[in-house]
Length: 506
Ligand code: MV4
Image (cartoon, rainbow, N blue to C red; front, top):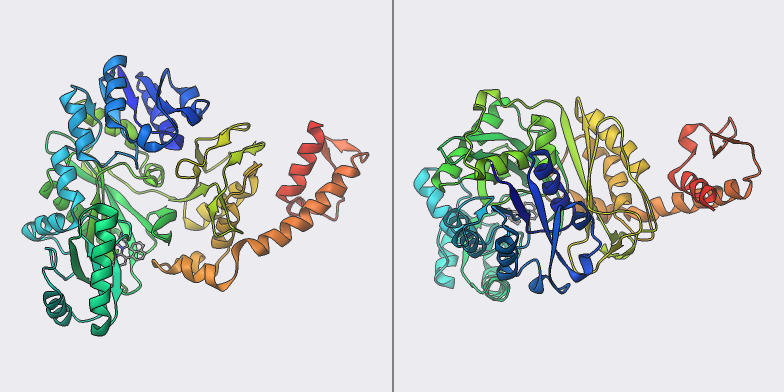
């Protein structure tokens, strides 16, 4: 087993990996940029090394600096987390050339899955169902026109080097094709330095369901169940859950077996995720494979009882998987909210700044993977993910009620967060009925502005809270102004409690 692991990341995922290292008796080495000097992952690590200025290119994206710290600190292995260089074959190669184990797949597996057309060619060989279309880049407009005619509109143009929607164009009819092809190619060239574009049959109103896979370095590969990831905004996942409400045991087995074939076809090792699009008839199609631990891994951990980061580290250290597929059971339901420092009233723009008050949820069925603390200043330089709040229950309804209660306990003062958005989603009938597809959130945000409703409720509650605080002459029981009997427990809104807490702190 490794003695020392360097975490080449920051924020909540760095804290998450540091915790797993400590549970395995491994010394955790953090790296940080100037603006992250006082960050939570730095405070929790056993060692911390400055790697440069705030800009990611000067710090968390700088392979040479990170590998240099690994060598100087005597780290046996590097965990990349997600984002930054976590799916970068050059980084994986630089680690192995420095004799430091990369906790993830091989560079070759990353490269294969990094190109959507190479991946599709590999899947074609392995007989894996993928969305009808081409598995090579389009050579000409005429070819695009011919293929689109064969598979019939609507079609999707996609960048081979792309992902997350960049360079993607939905084309509904032939007369849109030429301009769409030109703009897709130029966006692909601009975003990825590779203008290769291919074509797929567009799946109308799909769900995005992904299957977690885990493979050791001795040929053992298992699937750990699926995650429903259809609630996205601008191709950014906002809320995820496990299991998917529409996947039954038989479908899970079929998707899992395909996912294992994908992993084996790629020579995949360690933790990975196979993404599928699922149509209205619950047909599923291979979309792409992510060669990293995903943000949303906690929902899989909660319903399987497995610790994915422990397993990643053990696999990288050469351990064999200690359980067979039959021993993987899905129990209960977990739903994750990604808590971002974003202003729901200002188009979800980032809302950096000092966290002046922080009350975090806890109690039965609540997990909060957080990278923040009261008094810390959220920097503008990186993705504004603050924490992940996960509600777990015996079934989906209980998980929802846990999450609603947890969000009500979550108080972040000094910056704006997207917490109001989750209250809106969790109370939405379509969400509660699990009527989800990749267009769900866009529809919800179009129907009524999320925060205005919450805002009105909060303004009223703030006023009430201020009056309650002004009446602080009232008899305080257990340090809390005693509510009039008429106001049941639900009447004490978050803001009232906050103003009382503020009053107590004076
Ligand atoms: C699609 C699709 C419909 N048909 N491909 C978006 C980014 C990348 N993950 C693939 N994406 C899609 N590919 C075909 N043939 C719809 C989407 C899509 C989507 C997929 C998953 C999650 C959110 C999405 C939002 C918009 C479009």
